[in-house]
Amino acid sequence: MTETSPVVTYANFARIETLRMFAAISAAAGGANRWNHYRIPTPIDQQTVIRMNRDTLYSAAIIDVAEGATITIPDTAGRYVSVMLVSEDHYINRVLHEPGEHRLSADELGSGFVLAAARILVDSDDPDDVATVNALQDQLSLASAGARELPALDYDADSFTQTRDAVLTLAKGLPNYERAFGPANRVDPIRHLLGTASGWGGLPEEEAFYVNVEPGLPVGRYELTVGDVPVDGFWSVSLYNAEGYFEPNDAGRYSVNSVTGVRNADGSVTVRFGGDASAPNALPLSDGWNYLVRLYRPRPEVLGGSWTFPSIEGSAS
Image 1 (cartoon, rainbow, N blue to C red):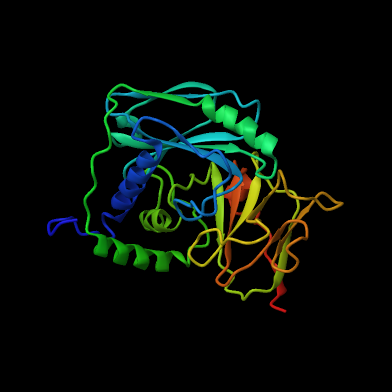
Image 2: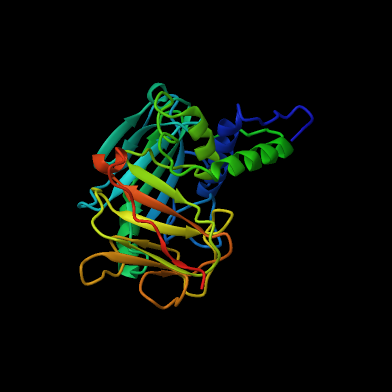
């Protein structure tokens, strides 16, 4: 940072925040145009962005697409996989699913560098399933015609922090991330700004519908029971602290999903917030707790609002 470093305001926050993330992701991979695979569910002491999930294993790469590039996705035999392509302005013009080679260009994706963020469904409590997903990660490949490295980023850190904090305060009132993520011509500019600050790297709602729940409740005992959910992928509930990160707990429990959650006799899943940490699907609480519901590959009744996710019940006693 120098005296001439660009000041960060609401107008350039999305680009600066995205380029900051690009730089961190590139550094973790050892440079651009190579994958960095997260081999285990999100480590609690290595949460690189807020509101990460533990339902999938991530792989990430910053790719120079100015002269063209390709990504190859393995056949996952029906297991959920997505590769989201994010521009330098945090717009998402493509999400890939199909196995095989996919061609990438700056004209289509909106910038010379893009983030490729892969998510593959995993049972975080099953070491054998983690190993299976690791093998699938190894089959992801990419090639860049230009193979440039990401340029250094310069910005005014003080104004960045002030702007981010202000936007995060506004984002606390955001009930979901509808029209926050996606192509520039389909997002709402204000929701895009709020989503960039509070849920950077989120998928468009057609891929994953996010319901952000800030109960404003003290630590206590609460629960919600989930029956049939109209999704073609899966659903999950992830618990976060006041800052939007997983809060370390002795039980090692941070999320519940429809694939690995313990089911009731009628097939429903009861998510328990607080109380006995050894109970099925229990999530230990901390002050300022909040949770994010992810509905992967939602059907029209979710997107249209005719179906809503159940609410919590219980008390602080």
